[in-house]
Amino acid sequence: MNLKGRDFLTLKDFTKEEILYLVDLAAELKQKKKKGIPVDTLRGKNVALIFEKTSTRTRCAFEVAAHDLGMGTTYLDPEASQIGKKESIADTARVLSGMFDGIEYRGYGQEIVEELAENANVPVWNGLTNEYHPTQMLADVLTIKEHFGRIEGLKLVYMGDARYNTGNSLMIVCSKLGMNFVACAPKAYFPNPALVAQCEEYCEKSGGSIVLTEQVTAAVTGADIVYTDVWVSMGEPDDIWEERIRDLSPYKVTLDVMNQTKEDAIFMHCLPAFHDLKTKVGSEMGRRFNIRDMEVTDGVFKSSKSVVFAEAENRMHTIKAVMAATLGAL
Ligand code: CP
Ligand code: NVA
Image (cartoon, rainbow, N blue to C red; front, side, top):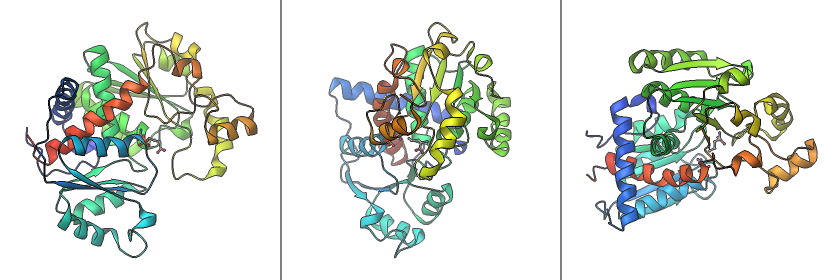
């Protein structure tokens, strides 16, 4: 498998074999890290990390992974750089290509990361756009594989806003890998029909399936994995909270929901999560709408079924695999 020089913009661009290769490579790099065996074969290289939206996991994962691989990192905050205001994405891509060996981008429309990739002559990695979150998917698949020892045929139910980055990317990865994907949400929050059609084609090849439903019990019966994400994503307007809480509350992941799944089912979340009121936004919503949590209850989040922190750690190992493979460290 040779992924040297490839961009990592959406998993639509990758085959099942390539995705599984990256997940297996991440597992190998994880083992080595745990055993204290260094893999710093990218010494002397440097990567640029552009974050137009905030981040804890993705930024830390890129920085730690790059340092483990022997690379230097430069964090670029659009507020403190020329990006967007005084310099176009295309010019930024050309400038950064002259100094760096790879560029990570987190921001708004997918077309921005695509424009960056078109104009850069080094690999560009998507650290989240409105439409897709591909590095998150590799961490999720690694976590699922570690837990179940297999991927194909598992039923993953995504509850909440299924039109955004995490929901879209889960539908793509499940359909590429032969999993049974269910989006459980009000109709208005179903994924875009063109993307569903494209994923149905992937399913024909992989043996996976896609179901879109408003019915919680039908969705979660027989589920191996229940997955949710925040109800309002980064970059969305603050005045949307009230509508989202009203529309998506029936799709909250509760203990009652988890009790309808398979005995050994797990709970996943890309994080950050509103499972209590111990955040600025959470406490404000708690006061305004008289609620204690949002997309998941604290009970589920802290239960033995929850694998969210293993999933978060796997962001680093999988992002390391993406950089190692596309920069040709192996
Ligand atoms: N899951 C995820 O992308 O987290 P951050 O927003 O903290 O990077
Ligand atoms: N859908 C969320 C994912 C965060 C990792 C967002 O875009 O804010």
